[in-house]
Image 1 (cartoon, rainbow, N blue to C red):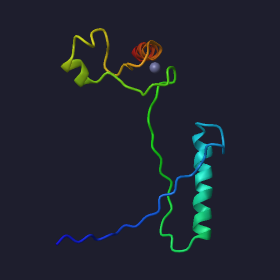
Image 2: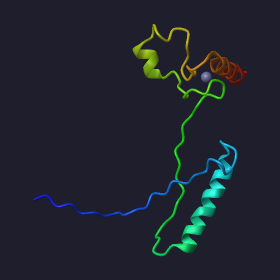
Image 3: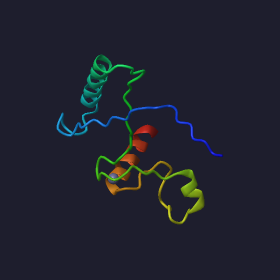
Length: 109
Ligand SMILES: [Zn+2]
């Protein structure tokens, strides 16, 4: 007979930071969350650990789309599709590609 054993109990808290500070202010978010951790430790019994975790994703500062670069696998598997593109070049917009190519020229100096 299958028997379920429950363990590793945890409480998942999702803070509402929408109106706390300007969107995208990572340092302000970390400070706010640190304050919340301290308040939980101070006011809640039987807490073994409170820690801050967050997700990170990369987006293009020009167009806002997710950051996606040409990979070695792209170049080798579909060379015709990526003709004229170079390894590491962002694919979302021309502005990002232009910036990337300019940085390559700076590096080459
Ligand atoms: Zn872009």
